[in-house]
Image: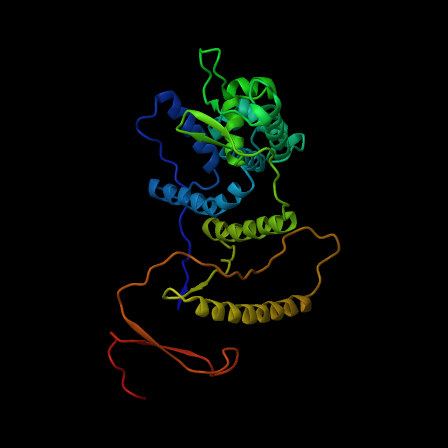
Length: 354
């Protein structure tokens, strides 16, 4: 097995493409100066910026399965990212004692002023990050009209196939026509995106929208488990960001992983998982006892709490061409010398007996 200590180093890039116009360059450099005024000593490259963007992609990719499951559209995810970016940027500028007007935030973030104003207003009003309930209402209403309105349904309440785009032929029925009746204040393209994400419709041959469901009934959301996952994933991400961006004098947070050198069988995986559960729980119990013995802090004290997380993961892999044999010593994995794994590399030189 491999114990990995990556020792994260690096930073965020900020180079301006040569093709950017002079006026746009001024705006970009203005934003770059505001974003990095507290880290002028850090030399950033385009390769580092690309690496950071790859980190964002790697963080988001596993959650696409959840997004599909809950009918979350790409536009909703983009909206969440924009709002989080604006809120974080506003907090950063406040900490730097700089103005936080909509105009300044829009210039730094590279977003339209109207978008920034709407995002900040939504945050002040306490609006949820997503508009999930509103989207479900829209989906339900569109499906109801589609199945019951005589212009869009046939015999026995069967929803008719509709053209994706509105046609000049007044006898043809289109999805924009349906939206204009069911949800006249919503853009047809936006609503179609939500219906596709919810699995309520499909597009046939790129020209026809077909109804697949008489009603959209989302499964019961395990809200507590989802929120817990968000909390701990945020904690893990913060730990890596701390090690990337920590100023002098701040400690390096512990980060280590152990990865099997080869693809494991299901049986080997289950054995590994059992050992991790036993050993990991034992370590957590020991650390919990250690924390309980620390001197208590003052009542109502403000500051940070610290913790450690242990998790089991998998990743796609393919065994390399190097042949190895593994001799298993029978016994109990949990104790002493027993159940150790002795790895024999057939390409390695023989070692003399000591």
